[in-house]
Amino acid sequence: MTPNASTVLNPMSIPPPVDGNTKMSSEDLRVSFNGNEVLHGVSLAMPRCSVTAIIGPSGCGKSTFLRSLNRMHDLTSGAKVTGSVLLDAVNVYADDVDAVLLRRKVGMVFQKPNPFPLMSIRDNVLSGLKLTRTLDRKSADITVERALKQAALWEEVKDRLGSPGLSLSGGQQQRLCIARSLAVQPEVLLMDEPCSALDPVATARIEDLIHSLKGDYTIIIVTHNMQQAARVSDHTAFFLQGDLVEFTPTGRIFTSPRDSRTEDYITGKFG
Amino acid sequence: MKKGERSLLGEHIFHGLCVAAVVVPLAVLVILLTGVARDAVGRLDWAFLTSFPSRKAELAGILPALVGSIYVIGLTAVIALPIGVGAAVYLEEYGRRSKLAGLIEINIANLAGVPSIVYGLLGLGVFVRAFSMGRSLLAGACTMALLILPMIIMVSREALRTVPGSIREACLALGSTRWQMIRQAVLPMALPGIMTGAILAISRAIGETAPLIIIGALSYVAFLPDGIDSQFTALPIQIFNWVSRPQAAFLINAAAGIGVLLTTMLVLNGIAVYLRNRLQRPTS
Image (cartoon, each protein chain N blue to C red):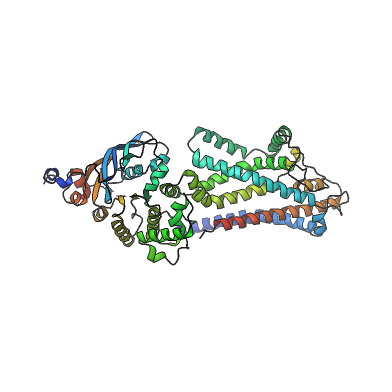
C-alpha cells in the first residue's frame, strides 16, 4: 500500500479546517533564531476541548512551535516570529495583544517539573494568582482544592499543603505544576514533553489526567513518545525539520499515514 | 609500582597542601589575634566603651568612634544595597543584551579594583565639596557606598544568575509580568547569595580607613553624631590615631580598639547571617 492511497480513500485524514470548532490555529508561522529559520511556515488548526499531539524527532521544531503559541519566544533574544497565531480568531501577535494576559489564557507545563522551590504546595498552586492579585483565605482554599483535585493530586497532599513543593516526588511535582497552571483557569494548556522526566507509573497518571482534562481544556502536547501520542491525543501533527508533514486524527496517523516520511518515523526507520 | 599507589600518593600530597592552605593563614591570624587580645584584655572594660577620647591614655575611650562606625556602616548599607541590587537586576533581567549593559559591566569590574583612596578623593570632590555635604556622616556613607557598590552589583548578578531559567519561564507562563516574576520568584531565590555578598562587602567597609581620612573624618571627637549631617569619626581612624602616638599606653588602647572593631564586625555579620537564614526558609 502506498502511503498516498489512504488520503484519497479516507476523508478522515484530511486535517480539520479552521472553523467554529477551532480553538487555536497558526497560519504560515515562521520562527527564526538569529536569522536561522527553524520553523518554515506552519499552518495548523487545533480543535477545541480535545488533545492535539505534536510528534517528531529531536530538533524538528515541535517545542519551538508550542512555545510560539503563548509567545514565550518574546523573551528569547534573537528570536523572530512571523505569521500569525489565532486564539478564538484573535491574532495573539497583534500589536494590541498583551502577552502577559495571553499567557493567563494559554497556560504551559514544562518538560522538567519546576515548582517554585521556596513555596509550599499550597503557595505553588496559588502562585499564578498571587502574582497578579490578592486572595482572601476562603477563595484561596477553594481554588487550591479545586486545582489539586483537577490535577489528581489532592488525595496525596491534602494533609500536608504546607510542606515545600520540592518535598514531592517528580511525578507529583509535575502534577503540582499542572495544578498551578489550572488554578489560573486557562482555556488552553500547552504541555512540552510533560512526562519525559518521569517514570512509567507517573507518566500513566499524567496521561489519565490529560484524558480527564480535555473536556474542559484545549490541550496541545509535544511528545517524542509516539505511544503516548497514540494514547492521549485526538489529533496528531507530525513535524520534520521545521515543516508540518502531516496532521490527522490520531487513529489514522498510526495506521495509515499519508506521507511516507511519517510512516518511516512511526515505524522507527529514523528518529 | 602499581597504578593505584602513585595516584594515592598524589592524593595525599594534594590533601596535605589543601590542609596547609587553611592552617598556615589561620595560624598567622591566631598569632596576631592573641597578640592583640593579650594587650587588649586588661584595657577592655565598660568605661573604655563609654568614654570619649582623652589626652590621658588611661582615661581615653572609644565611644564616638564606635557609634560613628555603626552609623556609617548602617547608612552605607541603606544606600548601597538598594542601588546595588537594583543595578544588578537591571543588568541581569532587563539589559542583558544591550551594548550599554556590556559597557557598564566592564566598568563595574574595573571599579571593583580601584584603590579605596581614590574613592576617598572622589567622595571629597563630589559629596563633601560639590554636593556641599561637608565632612558629615552622610558624605562618609556615600563614599563607602560607592566603594562597595561594584562588589555588591557583581555578587548580586552572580546570585541572580543561579536562579534557573525554568523558574522564570514558570512565572511568565503563569501570566506574570517581568516585575512580578523578579519580585515574587527570582529575588527571593537569589536573596541568600545577595546577602552573603553584601555581608562581605559591608565587612570590608567597616575596616576601610583611607577614604574616611581623605573626606575628613575627625580623629579627635568629643561628641556623638546627632544626625546624618554631623561630623564623626570611625573605629579604624581612632585606632590609627592611637597607634601613631609615641606613648606605649596608647598602643594598648589601639589593641583594645582593634578588639572592639573585630567584635563589631562579628556582631554585624552575625545579624546579617541570621537575617539571611530567616529569609532562606520557605514560606508556608
